[in-house]
Length: 447
Ligand code: GLU
Image 1 (tube, rainbow, N blue to C red):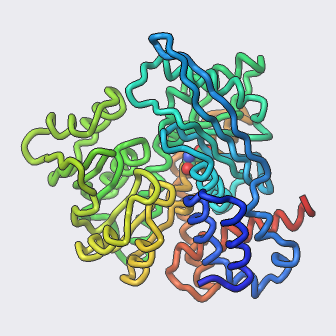
Image 2 (spheres, protein in one colour):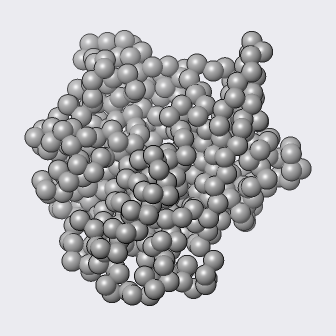
Image 3 (cartoon, rainbow, N blue to C red):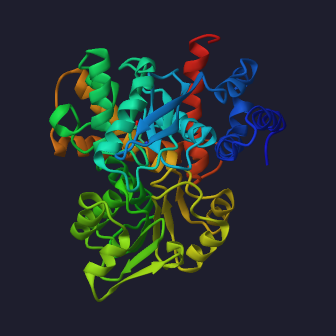
């Protein structure tokens, strides 16, 4: 249920952003949480902060022409939505996936506002990408695409203006090509213009691992708050990309047993616990499908094609694949299977009905903007190291990440308590994230 004034804001968002369903969903989730804030702080409504916050500062859409290895020309569409710069330069990743359109980029960018705010670090919010499908493309093709994409985007970027990073389909390889082209066009070695760089050229320790590790740390805090831990618990992680792989690594170190993970064709179940070295070899080194993992792992591991990984019973679920991957029915199955905690490694993986099911069942539910904020937080640490021409050790960087995650967890709980919704991490994250940006926007005047 929405506060009356917020219902009008939402109707306006629907009207002005027709057809962008994921964006509507992300906005609505925030609006459902911030009603109680308006009662306490009439200044937000007076200055139309809520109306302003859901209108992006700038949206860029551009053509990306490139040539494949056979000389055929392809045209993709590139995007960068610069949503909010009240707290710092626009910050957020780039997604290369055929499903990308303006509505996906805007949902990701609006989530980023509250997520980045929650980290407590000086970063604004943006997101971008293209409807390019890197699957099956050679390194040279990916390089040519990245060069063409950056040839347009570079004019909008800068270490104090807009700082992209990776997301689905954009990892270390793509960041290297993007940074190389930016450097060539601008004739500037501006390390802080992009994060997720390789360690050889200005990257930061732990950035690759940060989203997955951070998610595991956040869930560890949620379990601790309930007087328990990962120790010996059965865990299912969806996805098998960057977030999933490092969530599996850290969960295993913390004592959990990850029995299943997935890709877009199905899932693998491995009761002895996922073999991380084999998973990394198949997914990161060879860039192959998850079914190859099951073939090589042999007895004990099975690949189940065309079904949802959420049918595997577990005590902790870490959805780390993509948006809207947990339906209401999946959530019911998870609850029936004994799930006590969910940490979103991906952005908005749980559908609104799923969140409702978890809330009613008393499952500890860590929303993505809190649970996966470790990625962007570590990007801010990379920017900090670039600005001071320094590089920190792995141990120190991981400790900083852990402190940031535990701080986010504490603030979510405290805020939820203050606003009379104890244990509601969704409300805590939305309210705390909103308040910091809103206060900065008020202070900066009508901009
Ligand atoms: N794409 C990541 C996210 O969803 C990371 C963004 C960044 O590091 O800037 O937060």
